[in-house]
Length: 235
Image (cartoon, rainbow, N blue to C red; front, side):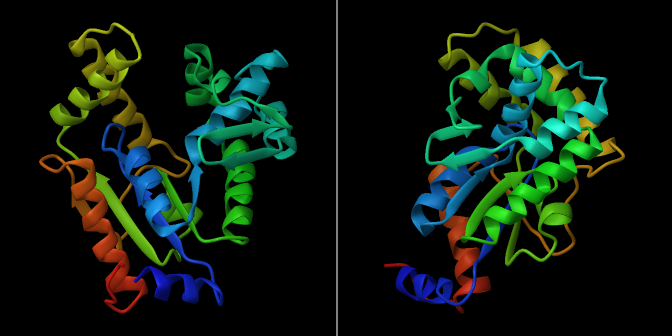
């Protein structure tokens, strides 16, 4: 399949869109799929974090929507495997700071910021085949994506995964508090007026609750094979 897919990419670019709630495994799965398919992985969260980092450095208040939109428009964000650059500076670690995460959650819901960031995401996809994950990729960013996946898991499992992720980073958080935070985030993402989290009508639903990361990856690769390469096998 890989040879066939690479040949296909010489004539057009392929977009694989993965949506789903926090803790469903989107980022890890998307990165592995990008590696297997030799696509560009677009980390949408990293892009919003980069804008948030710049806003913090410029001391722009989260309520100043006009200024934040200007920053998002002007930001030069470069994504490469394991690396994020903002205006030429390597900020891969800086954008993961807790204060940046908090700021990013506020910045990402501003319509002007989302429009500016979506334009950058579409520009990247205009240059290469991509795997992109987020909460509105198949519904808003790429409604005509070649393959759309809605990756989900039971709430308790999503909390467990996120808890293990935080503990691996040395962060201490009570499971009950984390569950409340994630429930609130799910509610906020699903009910926001601009680009809410929802499953596109033509997206394939994948429940990852009882699956390993590799099993999820293989499941999605089979879907890509059927949707994009007419059932041809991987090599």
